[in-house]
Image 1: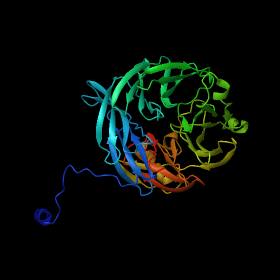
Image 2: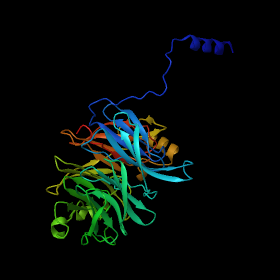
Image 3: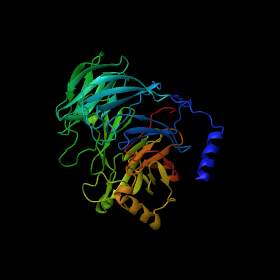
Length: 414
């Protein structure tokens, strides 16, 4: 008892500065290309992380469900987040908004109310997109009818809801144009007038057979070309510069990431964000694993690197676990899957390092001269950092999240 009293008296007499509540800090400038965002559906937030210094710089609360920001490239002062809020947390009256955030302070500055219909799913991208002129934001709706809500981010107002029956997701495809995938293997292009209202909707010829080999929605855009991979590992290219009625020019012949011998060994593409492309070098990074049919959500044991122009495989690399953290606190494993630590991980989580749950299932690559590859897993709040040139493992980074379901590069500092 006496020890406790003396301890409290010591604290009371210590010269501890009084903390000021309500201070708003600003991010250092210029914004760094070593920053990335990691979305956590458990904590319902997105964390901004500096992978070079292994520190969390800040976070935003995007409301209920998965939050995925959108970053304009020509205006680094703000970014936009489609959000859903319920009056009682996970129930009650629903309201959907597009919230505007200050890029320096990460504070909300404005919001636009949109129809309470936006789609909720575990897809890493394509639930919303900015047109190339960066004036209009399209939010994909599904309730279960499909449509898109158009928001003018310059004038901060909702424009209209456009029905898109049978067609889903949104991909920027021009100054005022949105591309969508349709259930019959065609594409729908929605063009907007200068005020953001509907100009026209045009459907292409069939790009792929959704019954035999559907395309995964995880697209990567390089300049005016979108790249998508099918479930069977074929890479498709969609050239936005070509007229919509010239299917042969718009849809080049797909090429396979997997040769015949590798197919016999059951090598497959898999993960939530399994594709990344470094634009300048034309290098393609793909998460690969051995698995049966319908293991397209399984993370990668290996990473394969290709040349986008020649279609040749450059190299193969075995991957390590992104690491394990609990409540934002990391547990270091070294660089390999060692049995004793695997046993601890198995006791804590029910998963083994060798199981799909512990594998990296998301990748992004920075776009500088010395690109860095960031690999994350949805069952941990950690990511692994590699040099993209030779896939040398650098270190692990803690994001402070329970889960890293979506990885994003904001484009600031590129």
